[in-house]
Length: 122
Image (cartoon, rainbow, N blue to C red; front, side):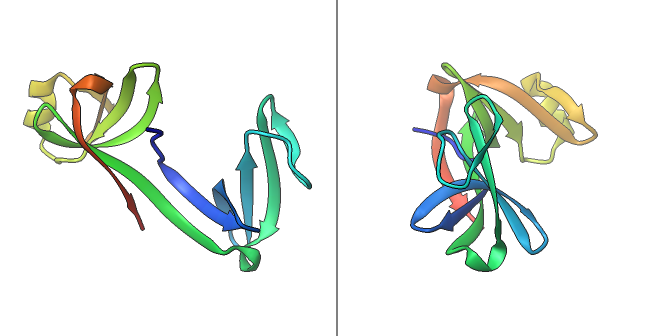
C-alpha cells in the first residue's frame, strides 16, 4: 500500500500530487508527460489554472501505533514516518517520540507494528 499525505489533483483524467498557489496549481509527475518539465531527476512539474482541475483535495493516511493515533507522513523500506495526533505530551514522552516542534512528535515505526491504516480525503 502506498501512503499519501498532501494535496492531490485530478486533471485531464489523471491524478497528480499537487501544490496549489492561488489561481494556479503545480502538478507533479514521476514520469515525463506532455507539457511537464523536469524539476529534478524523476520529478516533473506543470503549472495549470486551478479552474481546469477536475478536483483538488488534501489526503492524509491515519493509523494506530502502540495503541495511539498517528498520521503517516512518509515511508522508507519497511518503516513509516508517523506523527502523533493524540495531543498529550506525557504520552509522546512515554512512547519515546522525537520532538519535531513544540507539541509535534514524530517517529519511525516498523510498518508491521502499525494498525488501522486508513486514508481520509478533505
